[in-house]
Length: 246
Image (cartoon, rainbow, N blue to C red; front, side):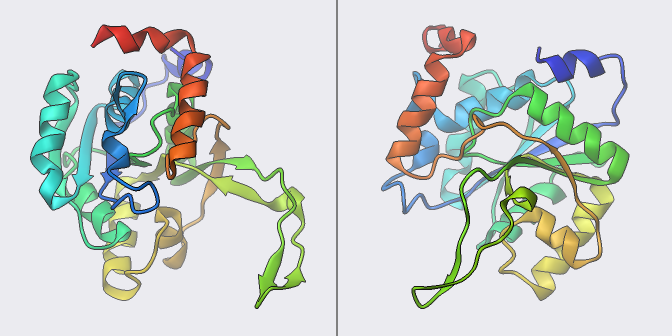
């Protein structure tokens, strides 16, 4: 159990469910990145196990591609994901997939964490911290400070250099009080289907987002290089014996 989870284990959070978004095409990866091998098991299996082991999470829903629903169900059985309550077909857009997942969570869920299936190295600390922040402030975004200088440009010409001290790189799980994220995603489905970030959907209806502590290891697998980096991070973790467990 992580340090944050250990500190909060005596604090009773409301019923929290996780929606794992697993509907991407993997075009930049050159194949199905969620089923790519990472330390002896598929990327998505590691993502599911992270939430299976997080004490604050009581149910898991996966929003998958329509042609992968059965495969994800099999993955859940193979790796003993006991919290997996539903695998639903995602939508055409990310916001559509998130909405499908959110609508499939158990009705008693008061908090919902939405997480990219391609972020397999998320820790219990990051999950718990984000849920706790959402419990206190309605919506939370794990993030890390931007280290590089960012340039804004148009047609190859630099037009602006933002102040790096106020810039943060967004991660997941993005966590919300359940009624808020349902309302935000329903609104996005009708009025802004191009929304690619769940927090942005909440911002559009006037919600306020609070930052939670992210992790530099909570990377998203987008390219084959990302997979190599993830493997290196995994090797440095004490839990790498998972390779031999299954």
